[in-house]
Length: 453
Image (tube, rainbow, N blue to C red; front, side, top):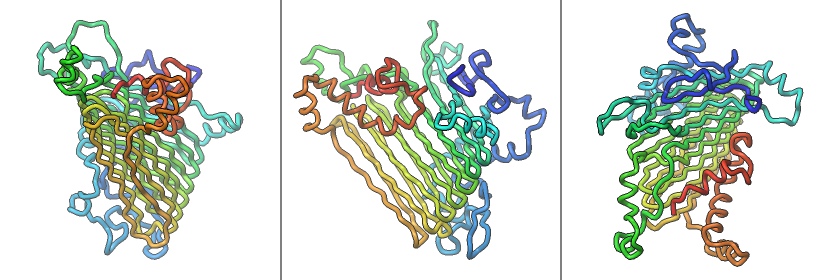
């Protein structure tokens, strides 16, 4: 309890008060809270849908030529606007999350609510140089998903929801975790569908760090890339057949993260790590820089192996003048898995003097692994500094040779290079959650034990 400012724990979609640490600023909102009446502002934030289906912007965008802009469909008008959310131009730029966010709004049984105020920042400033304690949101699921059904084709769905608001001048460190919870039960595992929706609002001069860790599904089967003949020659069970029987391969995880920087000089730093073993996953994060001087750093890491299908989608939209964004995406793909990264940065006509950088790096650990990396820039303004790029490669044989010449075996050398590849992203996760390098259950161990080659 001393290592965090608050903690909300959900098991199989149900709030667990006994494992949580609630405060006035970190609490669970259930049906009773909605019936008793939430503030109009909170209800407006909760009813917002991504992908432009809520056309009214979360904050006014200043424009010296056209005056304050309030509508998404009118940005960069009349020649370069995408129009209504249902128009073809808008659909081509969408992440496909609005329908699932709407489903979450209908099905979510409760809402994790985190609110950071100016007084919290004042208290933290007394210990200058010490990072604020994180707020933890833990979504745990058991193999059976809490279902008592005995049908073989049964399945359960969870719709976790989070609303995080950082007021003007506040400081907030937020960590979301999706993890497995082992249970002493004879119930058979069932397929699960997780449809999460996270909403983040950052005020003026507020500083927010946000980490999202998806670790459900256990570990994939290693060596699925070998042929049937090779498996027979080695007298081992066919890895592809073993992977096909793995229960978590039936699981699906969708997560939409919608970030709005609504105040001048607001800062958001987000890290998304997709390191679980579920069969299909898609994480989409959208960041809107609505006010002058706003800055965002969006870093991501996707690890896939076995027969997984993983998808990482990002959208950074510069709307106001003098905004800054930095994006680093790293992917590690092995086995017979398929991964994709679609990263979009759009600079509106009102976002002059934007400074934006985007880079995607991928390591393929198997000849049968596949990756589609698509970074993109859409620039409407004419006074900007923007770059983007993508690289795909295998682990360096020269680096492996160097490490092995120093006495390391091949597996240890590969693990060391794998961890070095992810460390730049992993270092942005709060150390109290990621653990130190030598920690047995730290992030390093959780990544390198994921035997995908």
